[in-house]
Amino acid sequence: MKTEALVAGRRYGKILYETAKKENNIESVHDEILVLREIFEDVPELGNILSDDRLEPFEKVDILHELDKEFGDTVSKFLHVIYEYGRMSEIPDIINEFEFFYYQDKGVLVADVTSAVALTEVQEEALAEKIRVMTNSEKVILRQSVDPDILGGIIVNANNRLLDSSVATKLKEMHRELLA
Image (tube, rainbow, N blue to C red; front, side, top):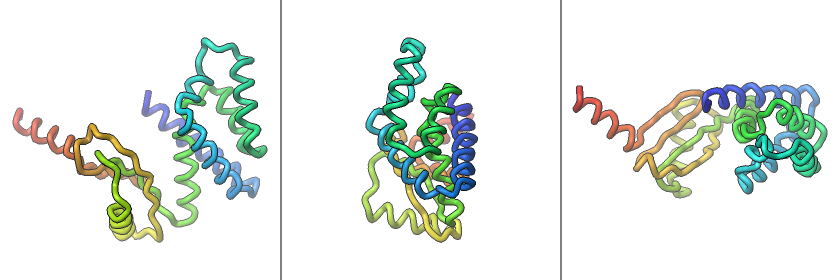
């Protein structure tokens, strides 16, 4: 299911990006989806609420209309399409993919970084510089998340390339080798 959500996120994110580019309002759409991201971060269950069959359709549409008041025509119409196709819970993935295409056109690499604890500003800057040099990018933007389950180390996902140097993965590899 998660793979399907990621594929849908990529597809819808690209469609939104191409639509905004065609309508020549890419910057305003980018600004609006950053606001949308904040809304979904503040209310993470919003996508599931709008996809929940226990709510009457008119209740979900009322919520959607309240939500789309914040946005211009492109994002508002897009939200309605996402709602109609039952993909509201995938909005965060869609936003991430839109952002990927947005920054790619600007020569900026967006890297998702997972660590067991939050990186300090110094660590973040050093990691961004290392990734920039390794990928020959003009600039690197790190999207950081914390997952204590990785125990230590980091996981970097950039340009569909995964670098997993987490302690959890290293322990799993050692376990596999010991059992072999």
